[in-house]
Structures are given as C-alpha cells and as structure tokens.
Image (cartoon, rainbow, N blue to C red; front, side, top):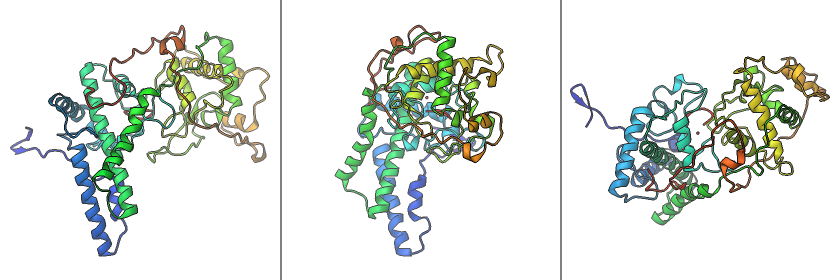
Length: 409
C-alpha cells in the first residue's frame, strides 16, 4: 500500500481516451448529451470488465487469469509505474507528466500501431519486436535501453504494454460503434469486437519478414550502386541527395498516425532508430515504417531483390562516415555519369529549383509477404552480431511473461 505523507496515495485510474470524449463534444441538445454520456459510461464499464484497472490489469481475451498470470501482470504494472508512466502515461497514450517536454513524443500504445517491426507494413509487431526495443531502447530519443532487466521482467513489461494497447484499441472500436449506432453491441457482439482486435496480433507470429536473398559482401561498388538506386527511385525527395533528411530543414513529409509533424531520417547521423543491423535497415526499406509516411519498397524491388541490400550498403556507409572522421557526402561523391534532376540538386544546396523542372516521381506501394529464412544466414558475414531468437512463443499469449522511431514500442 502506498502512502504520501500522512495520506494514502490515490490509486491510479484509466481516464477516457480522446475518441470516447468526442462522443459529447460540441453537443447542445440535452437529450442527445444524456444519451452519449450514458454510452460513455457503458464503454468505461466494458473496458473495466475486459481490461481491468492499472493496478489489477487483465489481458484482453483472458478475464480469468491464473495466479501466475496475475503475478506477471502485477510485476509488469510495478515496472511500468516505476520506469515508463512518466513518459507514456497511465493509459499508455504517450501523455505522461514529462511528455510535453520531449521531442520526439513518447509512443502512444492505444492505437495498436508500433513503428519498428519484423512484420509487413500495417501489421502488428511480434512479441520479440517489443522485447527487443525495450531492451535496446531507441537511439536519438528519450527512450533508454532497459538491457539490465531480467528476461522475466522484460516479458512482464511487454505483457503490461499489451494490456494498454489492447485496451486502447477496444476503447476506440467501442467509441466508434457508439457514435454510429447510438448503442453498444450485446455481450456476444462485444466478444466479436474483442476477437477482431486480438486476431491480427496472433497472426503476426507467423508474418516474419526475411530477406529474399542473402546479403552480398559490402563493397565500395555495392554502396555506389546503392546511391544510384537511392537517387533513381526518389529516396532523395524525403532524405535528400546525400541522406541528410530532415536535418537540412527544407523537406516536408507530413504527419504521422499520431498527428505529429514528422521528418525524414538523417541517415548520415548513423543513428538508426529501428536498429543498426543490416537486417534492421533491410526491413525498414522492404516493409516501410508503420504510422509514418515511409512506404514499403518490397513491390518496387520484387524483380531485383539485391537492390535492397545495395541500398542498405549505401545507408550503412553514409551513417559510418562521421565515426570514421570523414566529411558528409557532397557533390563530388555523386555516382559518375549520373544525371541529377535540377530539383534534387537545388535541394542539396538549399536553393529553389525552377518550377517546371521539379521532379514528380511516384512513390512505391506498400506491404510484402514474409519469407521464413533464417535471420543469421540472411545477413551473411557482417560486422553486427545477429539477433538471438526468443525462446518464447511469438503470439502475445496470456501466459507469456522484444522497437519506435520516436519513443518506446
């Protein structure tokens, strides 16, 4: 039991999410207000029944957990309250006490969207993806590494993050139904909503994205070809001719799924938020980044899968220049004989290009099928050690106890 001075501390509680609050936003008719306020109360009751409270959480789909499962969720809550709530908030919506001072903002779990995964674009992360990012942290953000956590503690925190993600998805779904139908489904209907939320998470365990081909040796030539591909396929439209992205200050790429203005990554910094292994970068190119304007390039390179590895080599080489004490890439480093669009050269030098000569290259489409190859073999002989496979099942199951561009998973 927690106390503050001479008074018992008020136990934490979940607060209504944005979508639920919007049910009564802007209403003036008293009868209509009363209807939607009642619906807000009904949604809150359903959430409590299916997801519990912060101190007594339930994993969606398991309203009768065993003592061991309850113990693991309690441990997850304790760790989350100590290390995570300040940024991610009680609801897991990224609105913790210090969030307003952070840029990029902490991850909002309640949308069920996680940026850095080993699954295709638009799909849920595997359990190992969540463990990996908590253990590794996110370079260039306020999300630290928790590699000192034991395996059991990592599993417990992931379970609690899943409680918040599932709960947030259920709240959003029920709020939408309440708005459209002015009533909630019966008990059977709510179970169908719950199942529709859980099934994509279960499916993710078999949706591992693996390279189509083995990574070839990284050479000056492969990196040069990668730079050519980088320019040819308009990667420079967001990241700039030399990979400096948003750091150049003149590239607008829009907002992310959470409503925040985003910027293309500065590849020359060497800080790869989704992981710096060749395989990590391969997946970012192949499958894109969930919730961001970064699309999947899998279809574009379907006939030439080694092209993705060549892009990886260019990005790795560019990101290593600072560590080697080399100057950032410049015009002298452009591939020989390459015809550079006027707009691209103007971007590189911060000058405005003539309107008629600006490039208009279509961006590639999204998503891909996962290949079941082995991760270690896929990268071949590389400098970075291969990621160890998790011993746990990949399905975010109720009895189980490893990434974000911005913040936590």
